[in-house]
Amino acid sequence: MHRAAIGIFDSGIGGLTVAAEIVRRLPTEDIIYLGDTARLPYGTKSAETVIRYADRAVDLLLRYPVKMVVIACNTASAYALESLREGSELPILGVIAPGARAAVAATTTGRIGIAGTEATVRSKAYQKAITALRPDAELTTRAWPLLVPLAEEGWVDHPVARLTLRTYLEPMVAAGVDTLVLGCTHYPVFKRVIEDLLATELGGYPLALVDSAEAVTTELDALLTERELHAPTREGRRSFFCTDAAERFGRVGATFFPEDVAPVFPVDI
Ligand code: DGL
Image 1 (spheres, rainbow, N blue to C red):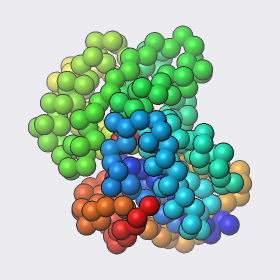
Image 2: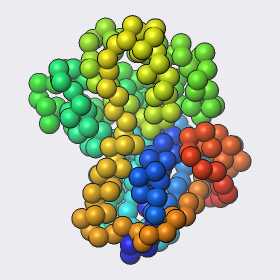
Image 3: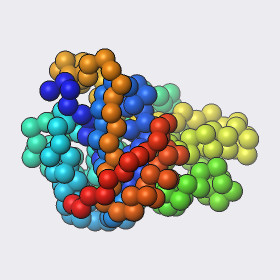
Image 4: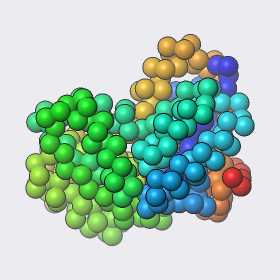
């Protein structure tokens, strides 16, 4: 079983930020990544639809030799994690709980900002997870819907992305948050731009950024250790699948991932 892969799923290329962190920290692990590019975005869909899509995606991953599945999508984690876990004998990790724990560990004042897709914000999953750990937390929650298309377009350090991010960051700064949860796996690609904006245009505002990719990888590593499931010492293999526009996935994905995202296999789920 330890030779089996880590299955990773997101609605598109955003989950590659999670895959990149897993590959960086756990380089001997094989990964099988599925981006449901045919149905992206999930962030504007209803709970029922997200659950149905996530179910099909995880079904596909489970047809391969996988030992654990990471739902590298906040929207799918917010709505579908519970039902996915019920239907599976393998451990299924979501990004919300690790992100909430990391936010609570990072904050000093208890004022925490949460940015995510409309659906993630509507689910209140982060709000519940954070206040369960720190009941006095003061949360400022906002949907940042324009970042997913910008990331999928590869417009990261682009004037449009900078202006959008500045507009999104201003209410967080006004609310005095000291920690910001990047509650969508597409958002960490903008980390460097956010840090630069905070340092320059936003007057050196101190803000701890919580990236669900880092938080879930720490959890995954701990679970692999606990179950003695770490891969043997060798270079892990990477396999990529997506449900539409495979060539584009490989091309844009390369900016999110430290290695070539190729070949990308088209699949129908
Ligand atoms: N990457 C997904 C998330 O973390 C959002 C992208 C989408 O809207 O499909 O929520």
